[in-house]
Image 1 (tube, one colour):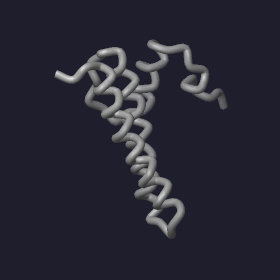
Image 2 (tube, rainbow, N blue to C red):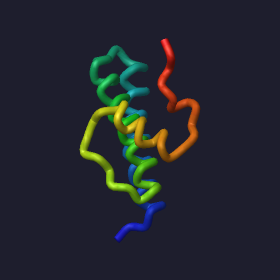
Image 3 (cartoon, helix red, strand yellow):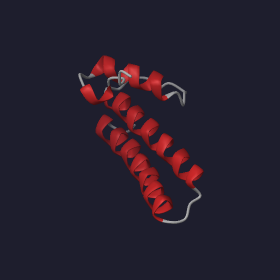
Image 4 (tube, helix red, strand yellow):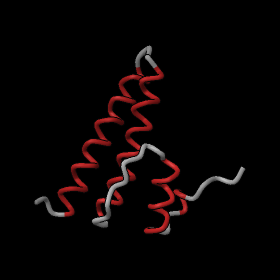
Length: 85
């Protein structure tokens, strides 16, 4: 069984890979919808890595707002707080 830090590194590597795809796609002529997909996936993966770092059950969801709420409960990260518009 992987230890917690190994699980977090795995989630982080996967998210880093998604961001690399975003950078390559946006530096080219697209397709930009693919870049948006990979950006969403990277954010989702980073947030799930935060949860994995606390040895919590990772929810089977793609809902970034739900994942954000779960992470905010664990951390006091102002940058995760929803923007007031």
